[in-house]
Image (cartoon, rainbow, N blue to C red):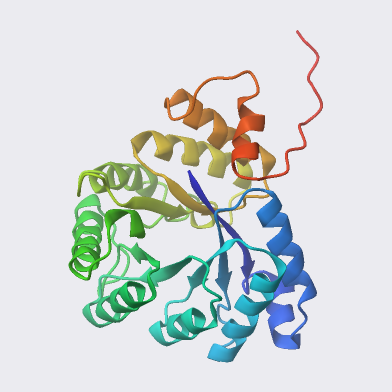
Amino acid sequence: MILIGERINAGFKDIGRAIKEKDPRPVIKWAKVQTQAGANYLDVNIGAVSKDPQDLVWLIRVVQEAVPTAISIDSTQPELLEAGVEALDGRPALLNSTTAEDRKLAQVVGLAARCGGALLGVAMDERGSPQDVARRVENGAKIFAAAIEAGLTPDRVFLDPILMPIRFMQDQAPKVLEAIHEFTMLSDPPPHISVGLSNLVSKAKERGLLARTFLVMAMSTGLDAAICDITDPELRMAVATAELILNREIYTDDYVRAFHLKRGAVWNPPDKETDR
């Protein structure tokens, strides 16, 4: 399972303030915490705080100086993605994201092909976010075909079927699960399939429980990546357990510890429960 740390995002007040004040301390903190938790990528996003490419460049450079973790450059603007790529020090990158809109798709796919990075495509188009499975699959297939035509291999393509807030659009969650299954049939091997878990739990009360439960359910239908709160130990334990039950890992009594060690993560086990 590819886990992408969500926390270096200007949507969080401390990161937004850090970008405005050019204070590297919160950025370094979250880069290290998420890396120690075993993140495969750190998502880096200046959000609505700035439209200046140099702010994204600053953010990426601070992260790179703090940790060796791969970077997910997160922007809806191709121009910002290009600036982010220029700031990279040679480590792997995930370009997050493109949509199926023709102009944006061509620009971002071409950039991913030139820089040797991976591409995350969000299954929406000029009409906005899809409300049904068919449009999700149509848009995802279009992004995937464009990426393959540009020379990307399936392992360099991530497709996002778009999660909606369960508090307001509860009917969408089963449709996303179905779309994930459909994405797995686009090729052999299939592209990676990713979701942004925070979208599902927006404004909800039991955020952690909802995120963990959906993630495990989605893994059973083919999901193999997520932008998430990787600092949540219960989420990491759920992922480790799901991988074991899905026969992706060999059983050991210490499988949770093994999951963390494999990622180079720090594992601090919770207090042992009293046998009942």
